[in-house]
Length: 564
Image (cartoon, rainbow, N blue to C red; front, side, top):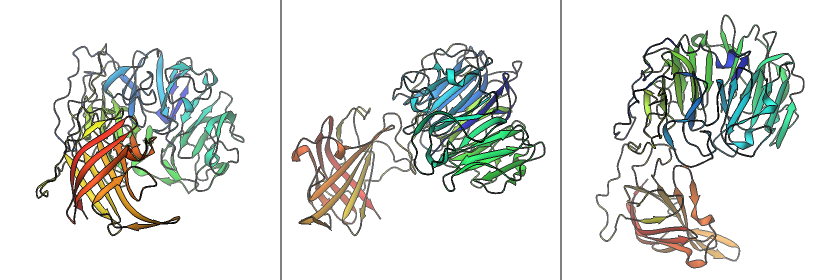
């Protein structure tokens, strides 16, 4: 999937895709102006805002799991994950739940982000008043590529009028009105005729597009706003096309693309028109006069200082209880907003007093509130306005857990619930005490899946946080007749680590950053590991783990209730 957000800078002034007014330097307190609450779990108080709060946030950008703020002195501060160097330092697996300074970046007046949490990696780029472009983060997203993740100037982009970064493709409008792209050419994203999966390409012109003033990037496509107020688009996965005029749009002044979606919106002096693919544009009355619209899994808009969000409302990502397609105000914002940014299931707003607030998913500290707790309403970014930043919080004082603990009442005699010794470079916990467990018997008992966690299970597809970890095991039994393998019902006994076994265990270790399939590790013979099942009925599965493969060891007793 492609992720993107678009920006337009002309002569140092903001137009279109990063609309909204700049923070008023004469505004009041910058110590934060919003309140929030955790959606689940028990939060301990996070750090408080430092007393010296003199810097103001003027622009925001959000990546898959990090947020960056342009400050009024031209520096940039980021918080959240750093697995692709999103915070402007060499990539690492640590989290910053409060802001950190991006080294070496000065004179920034605006920011654009893009990329994804996968192979491309997230990238952030800033503009200066002289139209110099500095970028950091995912190396695969840079046109000159790929030497380091730390901030550096991108001479190929110097002077561009507009810049947009997608999940694997970037676009820029040069001063002569031509549009250029680089990166993945999949689904004709570079308008070069590639209609399936594509290779990465160097900087190249988007053929047939001239007179452009702005470019945006959505899922598998790009669109350009032309000087005559019309819009042309190319790409799209469902119907890849060369650049084609979007009928029904005239007099447009700004353009926005939704990431992870094929929806684009154009703002005119009288209305906001949105369209999907090459469908007919339709007016969205609640978005009339929007100065910024952004979206990934959900969408938010900045309209007359109000922040409206709608769409998939998971982990509080809409900042309200809204679960339908109609935009609704984010709760907890007591000041008007001047900019917004939307990341992966979270969003943030820069406020008129120079502070910032975020809401939604907070697995890696991307809300900047000093915790790893999800927030269903806007919550202040801690310390972002401090004149000088100290060491960031890792957020471990308050880490989200699921709301429902596992009951081990009725566990069969002789079964034990851990502790389990886990030794792995991927597991940061000091010990693995089983707090939650569950199992499923599937395919008429021919497989059994077991999950163990050192925390209450997160809801949905949420991953562990901080030092949390989870172990999962899939048991299968087969009878081999020549090359044929016939599934059998799982029963008591030993299940071994190895693809050719007749009684097979497939274990996975899950942490905040990785799902490590232990079966793919280079094995040291047939004794590399096993799981012994001692109890298996319609309510419980119990046994003993004894897996040792390469640098990973998992040993100890387990017990899990079986759910239907």
